[in-house]
Length: 113
Length: 117
Image 1 (tube, helix red, strand yellow):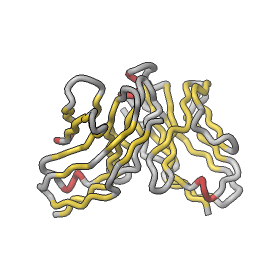
Image 2 (cartoon, rainbow over the protein chains, first blue to last red):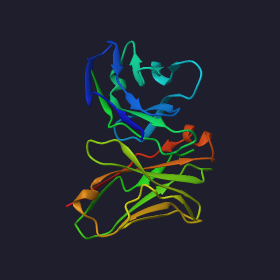
Image 3 (cartoon, rainbow over the protein chains, first blue to last red):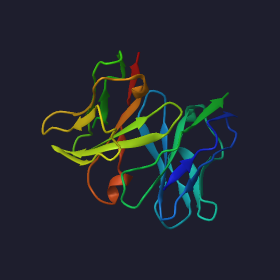
């Protein structure tokens, strides 16, 4: 069975500081990996995705994530956060051609001035 | 082009009542998916529908829950005789096509927060 763990439920950080949101997944088969972001009172938006190829994936708003197969991780990073990055971030591995994404419990990023 | 629209945004029901959650997919999308997020948990897949067809309901509870996506109108997630454990955020997503690309093109609504008193 496939599962996903987001190790931090909440990450407070000061504006312009770097941030890493951790995600580990378990799977015995190839996966697709996604990060979604949910801004307050809005729906989930796709931030970035790993399907194949380069393990370093760049997404919107300056975020990037690195697929590490040996550590089964897909941590999300940003070198300098803004107040507007305050949101809930969800990691979601998916099986090949599956809409049954398995979402993590989410990490709330709180950016303080 | 409006996004996925869900209503109501918040729904309060007493135990034993019925809850009806609506989802209008993005224009041009014919595939709808419902997910549920229980408190402190991630979203979990419930059901996948196309127009007038249920494709996959493997994530739906066996009783009290049903979903439809009629030829005309929004998709409806219906919960009969609600219990406190049904309190959750219910998200709808839509996509324009089937197959491998489907997962890459999921667009989510803002969700409906159901509270059962």
